[in-house]
Image (cartoon, rainbow, N blue to C red; front, side):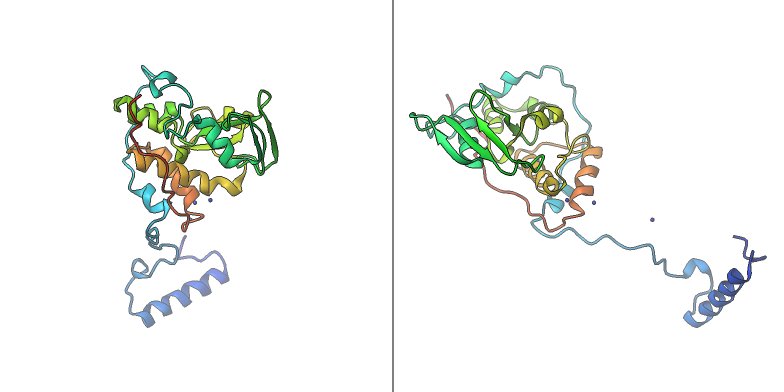
Length: 245
């Protein structure tokens, strides 16, 4: 989704084991216990090419920068139309990720739909505009990005990041708000079946935008992806520089 007191054996079973081991040394040509192969020691297999695990291993590792100066507005107005299809990003993502979608007469505004299943909880959630229990979450939180490279970006790159479908997922609002700006080291979705895809998504976004990770974050990513080493890196999304307004 991730190891003796040989001179006076304490019992006859240990004594027999000692004799057997001594005999095996002679048969294998080893001169000492130190030369015996260690059955518990094995080299980790290299991560498969194109996998999220391989990509995670290539991310830059640095300490978290201060949050000083972070503001949501640094990433542009919320849900702007960066792909210029006439609809805001939030409605684009709702229309793409919900089922049974109904829209307003303007052809953009999503009025209702069903998130089934919600990736974070695995449950079915009905969406109704104005009484929504569905948020659009940034897989890599804006604040987390700010502390790991985004504060040095251009305004256009930050707008692109905040509205890139690669970094956006419709999810249960209360679960999303418990996540806050946590990274992989501090938060994972309760739905364990989604964790591999979730972490692969974060790796994909960080690789695409050149964001770094902390050592604890990388360790957590590798722990999850070790359980699904074939999980692919995700591609696509929008260009990394939003068009000028």
